[in-house]
Structures are given as structure tokens and as C-alpha cells.
Image (tube, rainbow, N blue to C red; front, top):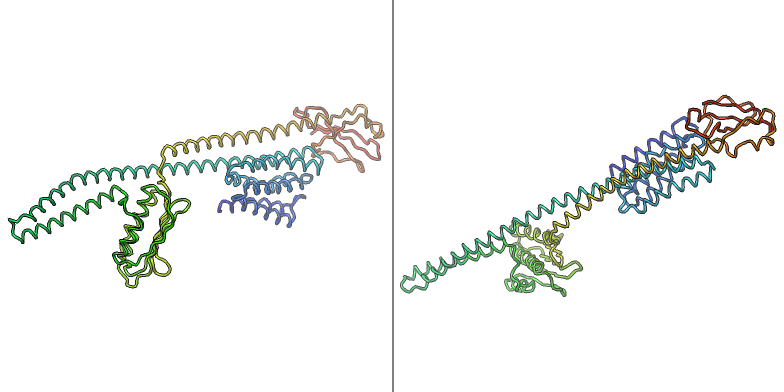
Length: 493
């Protein structure tokens, strides 16, 4: 937004200058207000309607140029030049495909040239309109298009780096799972043997009852340690919960434990086992937190099958008796687990003082695809290279085409207006010498020439067909008064 505001300010400065200058083609206050407002509307539309914004800017520039072509073409060309170039730059950067903008880039100069021919009837004005509109719109637009593709390349590079980081995290997770397996196999086996041996002591009738009781306590401690080890291994391995456990069974167990919980569920289609296990894990963690922090509150569990996949919501009402808050590590782990599957997770208090946990999961895990990232990156690089070549090609074509059109018209203008003054003398009636006059007069203005005879109207013709040699700008001036030739003068410029 800051860039758009800056370009709007820079575009309005030449418009204000065109109104404050002493040139006879200066803009009126109403024209200044209209063009500043149109430029502001075009700048605002560049983000959502780039083609429309470009059309407004091109039309505004052509209106100013054609309106001042006869009195001050330089002022008309420069008044909205910065605004048109800025809008074209923003439009090229915002265009998703560029097809509509391309139509404007072609039809805009063509429409300006046609309008110039209809209003002024002068080919040089038509060529100037077409070339000016093409240069001020096409070149900045292609530069903006290049910048858009370059920005996309940068974004794909950052996405690639982020996916590499996730791959590294997955590698670390796999290593943790491997270490967890080794710990389970080694430590778990030793704990099982210790529990078996202590159990034998507990049942040995030769021992005193006091020692058998101590052995029983030790056996329960070893068994509990083995269970904690199994829980830790399950967490490190990120294994799904017991496949036989469902959400309805979790709700029944919680209700049997004294929690006021109700299940609302719809018809669920089969899901990926990992997704199903994560869904169960979300409900289990939410119910566990409800038991810990709001044991007397009413809990509502809702599970539904959406278009993208299963959704679960666990609402816990306000607790009648306040309890100490937990560390929130379980919810943080759940959020990361859901995110890695490609889902969304939220957890937080509700306006009535309760707590809500929601999770939306895909039908299958969204695993990263490193090869796809490489392909996308290479494609983005190729698009940037192609866009860079198009920028150079468009600038070259527009510049060379415009220069060629101007040079061709200069030659045409000189070659079709050559006058041979040998048979024309002062005093001859115009009707007698009209057959000696060329079909066209020289449209290249006379510039700084001697004053015309009083009461006479003068026409200017070429001295020869080549306008590019040392004397190519010389002119013959034929002046007429009362339908008679006053004189034919050579004007050396």
C-alpha cells in the first residue's frame, strides 16, 4: 500500500506542474482534479482489477496528449507519463495471468492512434499517440511482471527451505523412534525379568510374610516403571493409540469415571489409521484435561464428517470449583501432531468461562514431497528467466518499432510533399499552379522562420525526398493572398 501511495504522489506532481506552467496548453483546475482522481482510482484498482486500472491510465494519458497535441505536445506527453508508467508497473506485478492486460496493451495504443486520425487527421499525431502509449505502458508492465515472477521464485525458495527443515525434523523423529525401540527392547526386557524374579520371591513360602509383602510392593513398582516406559516409547514413536479404542469408548470410560460427558456424532466414513488415531488422541487429551481442571463441569464431545475430513469439538463448561491450571504441554503436542498431518487445531477458553478444543483433520496425512519442491523451484526459475527475456524483448520491440515508425513517417512526409518551384512565379493565380503543387504539405512544422507576408497564408513543402541528409530539414514556403501566389521562398533550417 505504501508503494501505491508513493507512485500516486509521484504521478500527481507532473499533473500539478501541467496546471501551474505558463504554457498555452496548461491544464485547467477541473482537468487537474479529474486526472488526479482517475489516477488515484487506477492505482487502487491495480491490485484487484489490473486490466481496468491499466485501461484507465492509458485512456487518461491519451486524452491529455491529444488535447494538447496542437498547442504543446511536450506538456501533453509528460503530464500523465509518470502516472501511466507507475500504474503499468503495478498492474504487471498484480496480474495473475496477464492475458487481459495484454489486450489493453495492444488495443490502448491502437485506439489512441485511431482517435488521433479521427480528431486531428494528422498521421504524425496518430503515430506519436501510439508510440507514446506503447512505450509508457508496455515496458513498465513487463518490468512489473518480471518482478512478480521473481518474488514467486523467492517464495518458492523459502518454501523449499521450510520443507527441508520439516524433513530434518522428520529424520530426527525417526531417529527418536529408533532409539525408543532400542530402549524398549533392552530396558523393557530387563524390567520384565526383574518383575518376574521379584514375583517369584513374593510367592516363595519360605520367606517371612513381611518380606513377601515388600517383594509385592517392589514388583508393583517395577511393573509401573515398565508401563511408564511403554508410554514413553509410544510417545517417542508417535504411534497411534490402541486401534481398538474409539471415541465412543473413550466417552464411556470417562462417564464411568464420573465425568458428565455427552457424545454427539454423525456418520463417519473410514479414515486413514493415522488420522483416526489422531482424532482419538485429541478426544482423549481433551477429556483428560476436563477431568483434571473441571471435574464437575459438563462436557460435550462432537464429531462430524466434513468435506475435507473429520472434525472434532470438545466443549467443557465452566468448572463449579476452580482448579490449578496445567502446563499445557499436552495441547501443544496435539497442535503439532495435527499440523504435521495437514490439519488445524485450536484450544482456548470460551466466553462463558469454559474451554473448547477443536481439530479439523484431512482424510489422509499431508506428507511433504521434496521432489515436488525441486520441480516447482526449477519451474519458477524458468518462469523468471522467460519473463526477463520478455522484458528485454518487449522493450526492444516497442523502442525499435516506435523508432522505425517515426523514421518511416519522416521519410513518407518528406517524399510525398516535394515541391518544384521552377514553374511558379509571384502573381500566378493559384488555380493555374495547383497542378504543380504536391498532394500533401509538409507536416513537419516550420519552426523559427522569417515572418510571413501580411495578409497571406503560407504552406510548407519539402525541397527533396530525403529528410535525413544535411539539407533534409530545408523547406519551400509558398504564400498565397487573394488566390494569387505572393512568393516562393527557400527556408534553410
